[in-house]
Length: 175
Image (cartoon, rainbow, N blue to C red; front, side):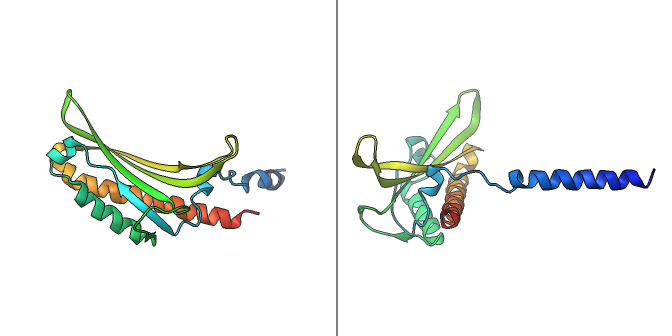
């Protein structure tokens, strides 16, 4: 009987795995927000001006713009100089917040939005809307903020790159 118990347990585990397999193999259905950024190859882009709090700490819009552009090009995106119809528009916004109770702390909020031309059926109207948003929240100090902003921008662009790659892969695998 002792020899039969491992065999019975093995059979039960195998049966459970076989019956569960159809449920385990299905990835979640892709959302419209995720698929909407598939196959993006060319973009226009802009950066919102740095808030005064960051400019006071010598973080300039020009510095961040260079980093943002370099990182976007590093993803293989072609930068188109003027906004054009059907070319996605990528916007970077970096915000900072402080708390009077935590005098040395600075919260950096880095947001990248992808705006695209869509046709909204409900209104039967074409429009440009944000179809994807990537956000990064990071806690740093006043002393480290000049180094933290470029790192957080690079990180947010890397996350965007993964989203773009995943969306393209998902779209190509869709029936």
